[in-house]
Image 1 (tube, rainbow, N blue to C red):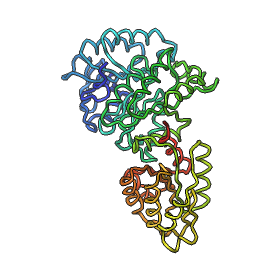
Image 2 (image 1 turned 180 degrees about the vertical axis):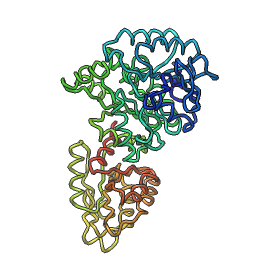
Image 3 (image 1 turned 90 degrees about the horizontal axis):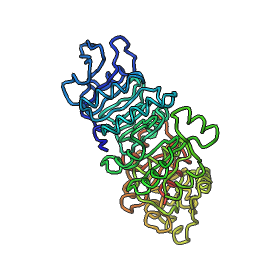
Image 4 (image 1 turned 90 degrees about the vertical axis):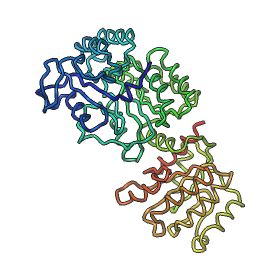
Length: 452
């Protein structure tokens, strides 16, 4: 199955554009792509005509170019006829935005378009979905452009059965500074499924992490997906709903998915070393850190802080997540003590956490990072940085990134995410150090690295 025209289209037709309703989903999709993205887009309406000096083509066969991707926003009962036109015109793929198929009791309609697609080798995603968002390339989401919050270009691909969950995660990714390569809403996933997208993204040169929001699998699909994910050279993260009986019912009414037995699913995921995110916070944290560091660690975490209270909370979070915070050897403690400034040396604590107190400076943090970076006792360093400490400057992220590169040891930072501290946060993230907005998030990042 060739998914390149679907996910990297050069030409696109939007079918169902209205000549009278500016807020029609097809109109929103056409308007946001026309002249804003490199994809060449055409509008299709059975009546033809004009829309703001743009041609409305009556049939997809009338278009002046061959089409890679057809975005179909026609009523469900018209979609089989649209498929016939697309296949006849040589369209290479489709995103069926329309709802009203299996999730609305019309399994016959969904079965019909699946049979047509299978016979013609015509890959499509959906129905009942938002489609595809690829930064600076294409956006088939029927959400007004002024209301969307879009992450920067990056290396995380997120595939979701729920369009709403996908958009919410894009907002969280943007807030956390996580860049995306692709966001794909698959809805009922009638034809192109998670496993197909995973296989494509395994070889996608811009994607480093593949994350999924899953509601359920048909019989046999879950096992095949888990086995494929285990073979992936890239980290695969799964967040699943439908864990409870009530959640199972909600999933079934949403995309007509079979949620299945969650206990069995969880066991299979753990057995095959696939990372499961328990909630949205974990998903964001896992995606951010794995987009920066791909190699796994044993989980021996070193904590360096300017606040004893923050250090204690970080240790508690590590224990909760079954992460190791080892007691440092006397030799390592002595090295840390000798490395810091004299004014800090007499008041700091050199256990684990290393509490440098509010008197610490950039030089003290960097000195401790070098000592821990060179030590086999620790394989990941979590910094709890308080931007209001007088001795901490905007250069701290750049300086710590150099330590990370020299010793090949993951460094993770906690920095409160408020506008006042954005420059400090950028100093970390722009230099390849993930920065979490919470202590728990920083620990979750370390947990993700210890996934194996």
